[in-house]
Image 1: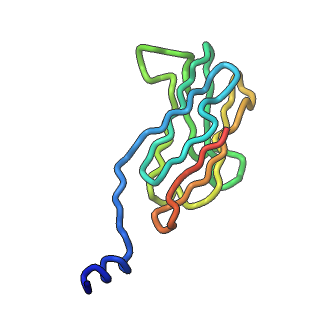
Image 2: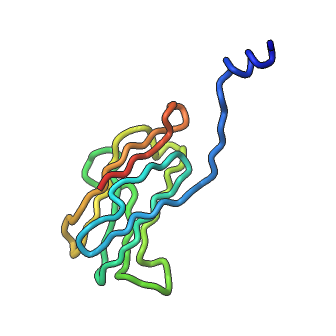
Length: 130
């Protein structure tokens, strides 16, 4: 009984391997509209339009992207039509609200909002909303 009590009152520790979550950036919309990610996951944006798009995240609110990439027009022979944002637990990613901005033809097009939570928080997820 003592061992069961110790197990019951001690904190639980869980490990999490890296996962990738896909957001499809279509001609007129972003699908799915939401996804939950936790630390060590990677957000992958797939551009299915016939034109180039860029995506970026402004970490400090200064108007410039600390993380950005370019997605080529839809391409089934390579991964040049995707952007990857790995959410690893390091100094770049601290808990907070972030927005992935998507631009096309040099102008703002859509944004994907998400909340990043690090390993020190009980609810470890990133919520993505389009």
